[in-house]
Length: 197
Image (cartoon, rainbow, N blue to C red; front, side, top):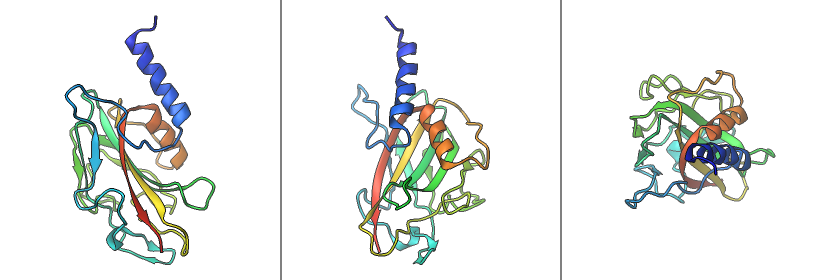
């Protein structure tokens, strides 16, 4: 019989391999007290439409490109750090579109203020690192789907990680960052917004 530790490691590897870069719809872990790992924006309802202040500025879009405020509750006790991603699986690229990846958020953090995703923002914890998004910048990049498309899904995912920091090169691809996050995820929570133009 496998030990709990061995089963845990096998589960993590299976999730990383099977889940790949997919986004979890809900928290993976149920808690005996009824609480669950919860991730949201205090100013945006899940399943609602992106506001103009959070849309991209460029590519024909005229948003303010401000990352939304985010908050989270009831992470696993063993969490060593957090990461956040924003992904559009509906982008017509064959591989979706990565709008934001931030990792090495400290284990005691429970929120990010609006605008924290700007490049070199003083609102971002000093330990955090932002990966290169598919616009080419190490920052938040808001929604900007092609005109005339059906509404795209924008999936915000919070990862509770088993390491205090991940040693990821500054020029790492979004796929490599996603692989590392899934490989070290203890739990995930997510919500989805929509946008079309």
